[in-house]
Figure 1: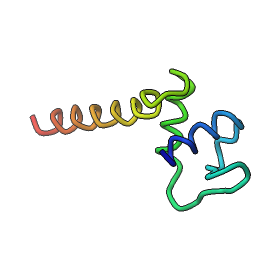
Figure 2: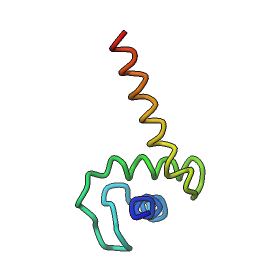
Figure 3: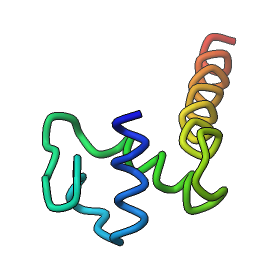
Figure 4: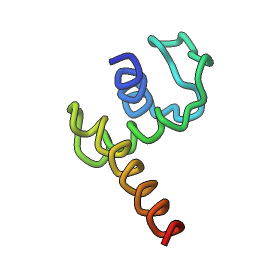
Length: 72
């Protein structure tokens, strides 16, 4: 829930450079790639749990396809 909220704040404030735990409170404990992925999902599908999770699901499917392609 924390990272989904951070993604929502990115979309709401338009600040894609600094992940924020709360308004004006930067969060530098993790790299922002996963937060960016969730934020793109929110921009594409609106604010919902599905929108936060779908980019990560797609990335997982892509990794499986790459592994299967390399192993054959």
